[in-house]
Length: 281
Image 1 (cartoon, helix red, strand yellow):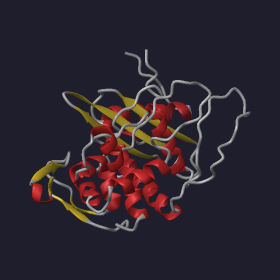
Image 2 (cartoon, one colour; image 1 turned 180 degrees about the vertical axis):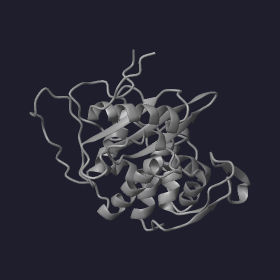
Image 3 (cartoon, one colour; image 1 turned 60 degrees about the vertical axis):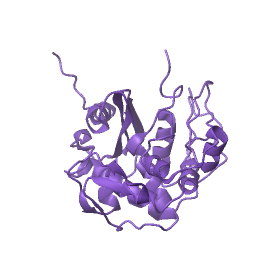
Image 4 (cartoon, helix red, strand yellow; image 1 turned 60 degrees about the horizontal axis):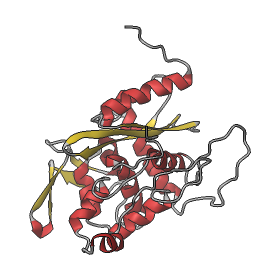
């Protein structure tokens, strides 16, 4: 009897790549055209540790747009080597993750955005670069609630305008005292274009959510939770130009977000548009 949208926190998986990408763009470590080569695996420094991409054959040489479109792990492992956990955490907090949320009900689960100081305080241990690699793809210690992801997506859709969610019966509520996030609009635009490719490209991980009456922008996530089946995520906004709604779908232990999540998203958008017709068995 847990309201999973607000009462529990989960690893976000590849949804978090949006945060990593924005952090790297903001601190000038990459541009949208920065390329890395994915052969399906990544070797971390002198440790010899090998981290793998979900696509075993590798994505080849790709830029940031393609890396988000195809959710390439190896691309973001490379980006992570250019960032500190503090830099990633700074922009995660800027986008509302791990931050207090005002809502007209109580019992909101807090998310967790770790950094090296948090780990020293919690475990009395130093932070290792391999943990930055995990953090960059939304694994490791990172935890979020679905409502936090919805707020993050809304901020991106609204070009950086900060969003505080509300439960209301009318339009009487207190506006956020914060106007905008401290992220350049041109970088948010890069992320929005990449999210469009996630659905509209034939290489995109979210193409099963595609609808024929408008352009949909989204990001999928598949969060590993061994030994159980992965959680499936998909978040986005519609329509791409002049967005009217943002959404998040979380399927606990549902497997691939690009399959379980995308199919639900397609039905949700059709239902919102008024064109969904339930199939009768």
